[in-house]
Image 1 (cartoon, rainbow, N blue to C red):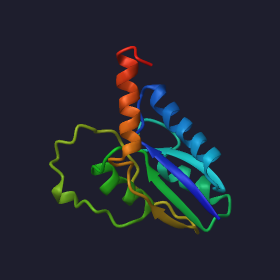
Image 2: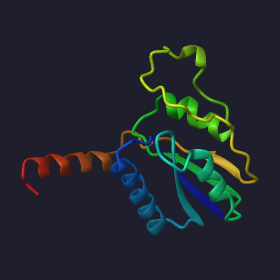
Image 3: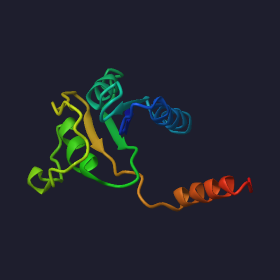
Length: 143
């Protein structure tokens, strides 16, 4: 059995959280997963670790963690892997120390019995280009 955890960045604006939660609803409806949870890097609850623990409570063998980010960055290469107890792909020495976020984050690795599988961010995908074209048409009033 497989559970999914979608990871959003988090924001003070409620809409940011709602978008990730709505995507999770779609994944739950369209996929065949035991459970789909959401967690956030910062500024929102639940945390990444809390979401993974909740997913593990469903008794799954694997938890696939998907960063709902367009591209890799410090969060997807360093922060989220640390939270998952995985080896980060970003060395702290590479950090430019000018990162604009200074929010407190708990990097304590989550401890669950299930295997954690870390997926890629959304990336460049023709399906995203279709959405961009839809947004352009909407902006031009050509819906």
